[in-house]
Amino acid sequence: MRILITNDDGINAPGLSVLEAIAAEVAGAAGEVWTVAPAFEQSGVGHKISYTHPTMIAELGPRRYAAEGSPADCVLAGIFDVLSDARPDLVLSGVNRGNNSGENTLYSGTIGGAMEAALQGLPAIALSQFMGPRTMELDTPFEAAIHHGARVVRQLLDHGHWENRAYRTFYNVNFPPCGAAEVKGTKVVAQGFRDYTTFSVEPVQSPAGRRFLWIKGGPQHLPTGPGTDVTANVEGYISVTPMRADLTAHDQLDTLRERLE
Image (tube, rainbow, N blue to C red):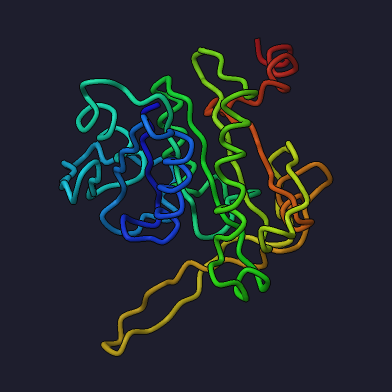
């Protein structure tokens, strides 16, 4: 198996090393793991592609490249440049430092990388490690992802829906904020919504007197609705959410047609 991996935390992020190990285990001794990751952190860029300027790419070592762009740029670089001789069998994105549950999914470069792979017709899985007080007490906060990551990827490869359609399904996996031994299992759940918090801005003034704005978030560890990813994670479960890039509100099409057509 030939696996392409990327992330949004950057080529030197510890979560990428975790993903390299997961991918190597899944690929097997005869497989190949290729890394094309951002040269610097790209958190929060979503599904951005850099179509207004060129992307510099550098080979750092065997099967290891850094691209001066977003995770989606890296996936495009991997498919059409680095692996132009033969497309990868699977694209993995992560392991993100922090959760991509709930509405965080919409901002995530980790998700953006997996989404681009799916749009290119490839199987893709995004993986993220929910952080919290318990993970900070561990030798590595990625412990749950390290111990359970390869198993979850294999389960999805064996039992996931990989149909070839216009908007192909990809998967969002979040490991709970606890040690590996505390993980209670896996739950297939919907994307949640934290209605108790939003992103906002905090103004600051530089020593030179210029005014800047920091984007800031809010609480992350309160559950969302039942059967959703945030709730599963804070209760100690690995969440698996099938996703597509189709943003159509299909449940409203019929009623809107009756009103407008």
